[in-house]
Image (cartoon, rainbow, N blue to C red; front, side, top):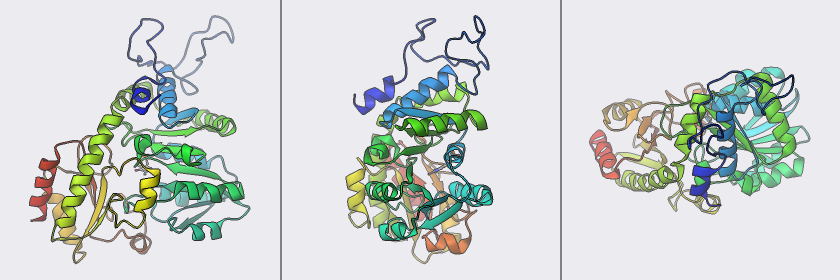
Length: 379
Ligand SMILES: *Cc1c(COP(=O)(O)O)cnc(C)c1O
């Protein structure tokens, strides 16, 4: 089955009780049993809920995986993966990781004895050098946030397999429409569903997908034991959002390309980070592992002036100044003071998050209007 068909139909069937074509919001905590242990597959909604279950099957299908699990946020999904580890285990990750992922690794899990290494993952030799028998997870984010670096998923998979580690890919930026990491050798795919999968800036949610039964059992055990589940109302909204994921992503990609090319011509701008440019250092890897380049773009200003960057993010009218990304409306952000403020200045600057860096989440409006807005803000 092709992507658009799966997005609309996978995991979803008319409600057996009424024939309702849309999966009902099963707003219930518990389920009545005919006799002890005699139930219809649902006992308690932390463990399982029909609306959430439909969504979990849908997300697993669009990621070309077998098992899906949804959580109260992207970070709760990450929390589940790291809880599969034991004290002394090691994780290797990218040095320009999403700020919240860096924070949960460093400030929550490090004190339980899990060791995290951060490295420029575009350099596969460096990643390989950090591996040892204690390496249990290689954690990849690609494209990275906000530098739009591209990491070679298949190459990371080979390194992970050599040391018996799991490869986990945060696929939030690309979405399964543009990239399916399980097909490239990943063991677990993670999403901040909050972003493109939900797509309408109205839900906070996370998800994990795997095709490995052993990993899936662990995933469901931790999901139920830690209890960071998502609710039926949010599951319904995301089921609805995913039905247009392919249509939205097509427009995000088209608009992204137009705006990236416009920014390149602006006299105020120094660098434009977008993996669709042939000049992008890993453009070829992006072309190989992605089916499009998405709507996330970052750029810096000539002179790298902080006040000038803050002025621009204030002057835009259509682009809303906000954290988050992936919704139908365009957003603008200033990573150094917003999403990446929790990363020490020297650490973030080493990976390119300088004071004038501005990040765009290009929405699905008309590109001409978005370009006009940026033009007036840059003038
Ligand atoms: C937003 C985001 C997260 C965290 O997800 P939440 O839903 O906000 O908890 C993780 N990774 C990436 C790449 C993100 O953009």
